[in-house]
Length: 314
Image (tube, rainbow, N blue to C red):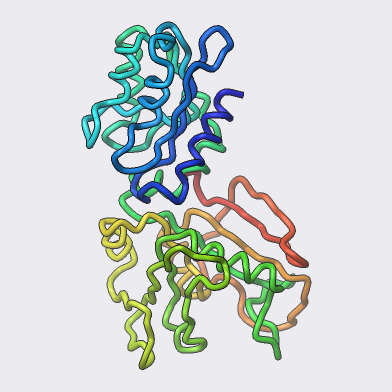
């Protein structure tokens, strides 16, 4: 339960902290009693572990620390959290998941163990999901890429005579997805066919994502999209270096196939409508080989069904 509480605390930072920092929560327990809690609340505030230690005071000595992410062991804008844990006399650390940051990547656990602190790592899927975009961004040097597509029950991405494939609830969910990511991207085929705005509308978006088009162009006159012409890997690394941690790929099938074939898609969101189109293109153009998804799940979204799957674990 204390790890679940740490994940709950970490969520308090969502929407408040910079995209380039993970959500982290921490709970200190002494003899079955919670003696300190903390979470990272943004630039200029203490890290979750330090906040929990400050709340606990002397009661941290001999306590067990439950934390949603491996304590850092390097000097950044703040001293290492692993050192603070050791100095406070914490007896045991139970972490939900390790830190993929090359500057940490097990070093926090090593620091704790070398000081005699007992360490357990639960490797919770929920903890990986909580920071999925950041984990890929920090480990791979590129944004976490989600391919979103709407299809009919017979696997077509369009319905003859209709502008929409899915219902209103699914379309609203897409706007929520746009509001939650750093960038949205389509290919030039989609630009020429639809001239999409790619904005997040009607969901109270605090800020709009960067809106991108991959291809040679030119963009239509008056388009507010950014045109990216270089190789996918290079452009994604450039986006990542500019602070883009998450990218929503909205199509079409040709661009999706390019991303998939290059191993640059992390997550699939497939909105399936209860409609048989009978004709039209599928969600992905030709691939060099089949790709298998992990962690497949489903949920109802209005009259549609949303399928979620991962190409790899974040």
